[in-house]
Amino acid sequence: MPAVSASPSAVERNERLRFLLITIAAAASMLLTASLGFWQLRRADQKLAYQAQLDARAALPALDGASLLQPMGEAERASLQHRQVVLRGEWLPAYTVYLDNRQMQARPGFYVLTPLRLLGEAAPGQPQTVLVQRGWAPRNFEDRLTLPDVQTPAGTVQVQGRVAGQPARLFELPTPAGTPGVSRIRQNLDTDSYAQETGQALAALTVVQTGPSSDGLLRDWSVVGSGVEKHYGYAFQWFGLCSLIAILYVWFQIVRRVLRRRRHAGTTARG
Image (cartoon, rainbow, N blue to C red; front, side, top):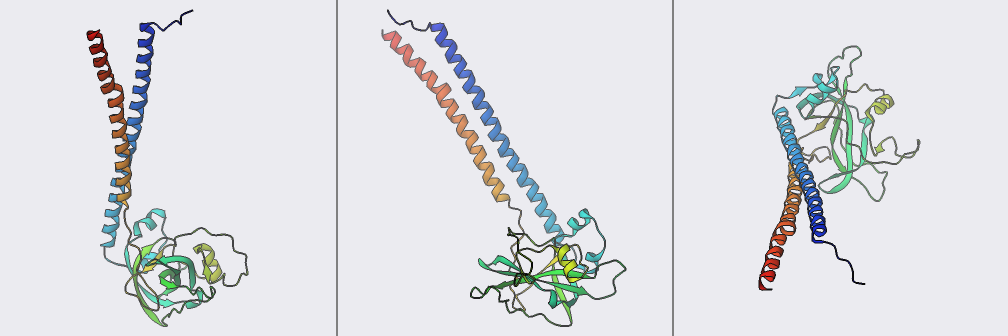
């Protein structure tokens, strides 16, 4: 018994349905990828605006230490970050801590932090000490508990730097209390716990010391950047994918259909 073939109208309906579904899928994919590309461009614009804000703050006159000791909310603390600051006070070297696994110039070592007690009398209930991220020192890998040779000048010192938030945190495993070196060498530093531990009332913000290397410390800090290049790269990828979808759709769903019809018409005419 001969096989029953689909009628021409049924084949055409199936082709139209397939064309419609592919068109919807291609349009949705193009809309999604284009939207993601424009979203990355908007993120780049936001980062540029933020970078301009940071640059404007850095260009303002330097703050004094008293500006960091005033009670302030989250918005006020955020507005002071990256401002230049000049501190005058005395180091408290007994409370120096060493944050481990920090890199500078592609070398692993410590970030060295020491509290600085500012000159002058503090108002009741007001902190008088600022935690300073002084610089980087290499680690002794033969004896991991050996502290680097860092000099801490006695007496009154003047420290130039920029206002920062809390020290950057790294992933860490819990450290049992009483482990040798835990009080000086640490993976991270929680300033609230550190203040309770040392008995020093600390300012809510820290200071990253800038300037040339000294006291056995490097200060080649990473430049604060907006990172817009990353967003431009992602936007290029999304727009490229959107263009590729459009090209493939036009070729397979329009150009090839036209060519196929022309060949079919030519074959019919010759027959």
